[in-house]
Length: 331
Image 1 (tube, rainbow, N blue to C red):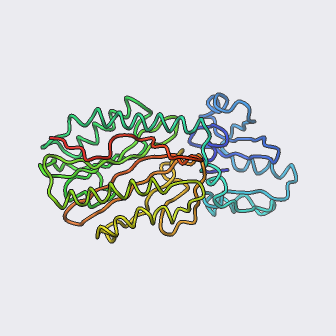
Image 2: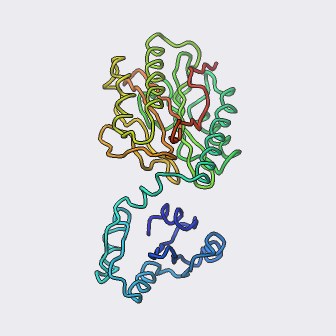
Image 3: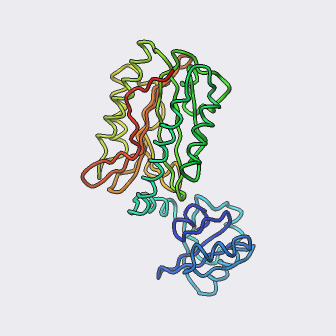
């Protein structure tokens, strides 16, 4: 394994350089450099470690010495040049998304970390909201959110999005010095990270009084989000869940303004399997956390997105982010 996220998942090692071999009996060997000699012993003391700057070559030699006839490798993550350097004597077999799919279903420990990350996210927003008012900038709001996340967790799970006014039509708008104005809708997309596990939530808030068209858009997104969450369950396909929420927005007359997928899995990565979308082949299982985040984006006018991280259980859906989805109004 060469993808550091999967190395961490399989071994517990959190360093920025490493590769691992997992043998058929479940044992493993990891290679990393001297910067992480102490760390690798602390984080995965039950795994044989090779401290070297030639990690892949060292593990390749170990594989060759055992006489194995086939070795799976992460073809989606290993550069072609690096793969060629390993030679063609070991029967390299592409793994595709095999390990990524293993990570999709979370155990109790992982779900517990996600709950903590989501609680920290809810608390961070609650702490920042009283400071949001006419005249403050998008950058200030983002900084307040990030500071609150750092007070409660490892820090932000990703770059916080604050999109006000017309910028709300840009799903991944980066905060600017634009000052919030009366009548703005402001989309805030953020999350905390706890022991490597990522929360993801979005709320769109109102600054002062908003117009009828803004309320219409908000109500459509809120209804679509509720419908999408209700459609989740083991055995449901990603496409049918997406379609259930998307139909609400289409019926409201905003179908062309919802261009992205309904959501995605979260865990050691902020975007991971399964992916809820019109072309996804994924299927849901129990103990799988996903986001549900429909949006409507109207160029030169603004937009709305509402997102929660939720967990699909065998007999119910658990919302991990719990801040109200009713429109929050600030001064």
